[in-house]
Length: 344
Image (cartoon, rainbow, N blue to C red; front, side, top):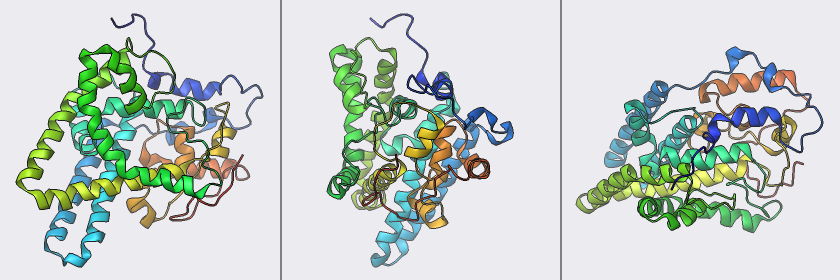
């Protein structure tokens, strides 16, 4: 049975949690999130995100055509460009994950199909782990936190290469999740392994976990279509989608590892966010594949996670003008955290 009176989705409390700063934030912060002019805090819209996804699908059509007719030796270039657009789908769905959506009306369903299913992820699953990452960044319950990375290049490299397994692992999530719908005991491993839950709680009665598991049905239908297409058109699907999708996993893991200093935190104060979050790949080439849709403007994204990707550059300019001594310098294009030390 699902517990009655469970709290609202974490996305509803995210801004309040950041404003509060957390239990360890005893001292008042000189950086006030509420001081930002409201016109800079532009929210995304479902319609706008659907248009973004359609534009990227159009670019995929261009790259696939080039892949078909260009010389064979140029395949790595086109595969990388396709991987960059698949990576961009994740950022589009990521913007939607921060929105206080209720249910899935047709436009949200379409957005999930266009930008989530090609990545083997649902909107529900992304919201589950990503909102927890923002609320608890650097804490023990942060799904993305990896201890032991700082100053250990070999560990960093292994974590990056795990990106190759991202899409295959997420593909397994759909059938496992549907089993968890009918077998409550499976909701615990489903939540911990596939939703990256670190709370240690018993998730068998979690409405949120059950919703994620039920949402896997559409993902499984999409995956069955991909498998059928792979059987009928093996080479086009393999070279046009499967290989670039694996590459997109590497791009995503590379980006994630460069966005944060992997040192423990105890609060959510703006100073802590500035000390443990990093802008990177802000130039056009880096934004093409490593940090699409302005996700490289990562400091202000963590300060204001519900702001649209389009508004992040102007928001970053405001913070840099107001707090020039505190706002961190960006990492240069393709820069690694590989040999860097802690920032805090």
